Length: 179
Image (cartoon, helix red, strand yellow):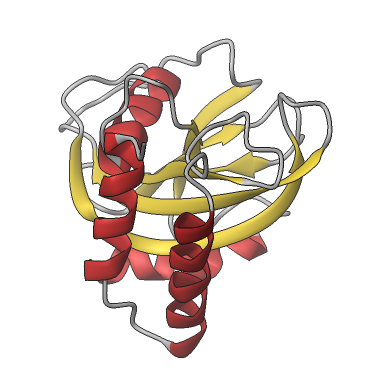
């Protein structure tokens, strides 16, 4: 039986219209993976699984909150695995962004902004892939982040002056700023 999260992921990606051919190709790949695997949204799916992340902008849209990921050792957008209680990818993205930023009252756009598949060894302890569905959210005016135990550091960065090693986030951030 397909979960509510799986059904939402399929419907969300069927409805989403990416801005370019590369994102459209990924969208089709995600839909094929979802059609083939009822467990595609579950962390236990060793072949890979959908994750949800968020580009969190400040209220002005001039800064992005990045986390220094302890396992990866780089600055990344907020996000992570879908949990059993998540009923939509947008809910998972918002939950992760709220947990990892310590900021309440985030305003999340429920339409994806970007997709990315990347190899990773996550909590399964074996090589797998994250089929990351990325969203964009705004923090309330004056929001102050508080790092969780899922981060070595958490900091606002000017969107056009990101730390070294974040060049692969350029396309994602550009898509978020276009929103």
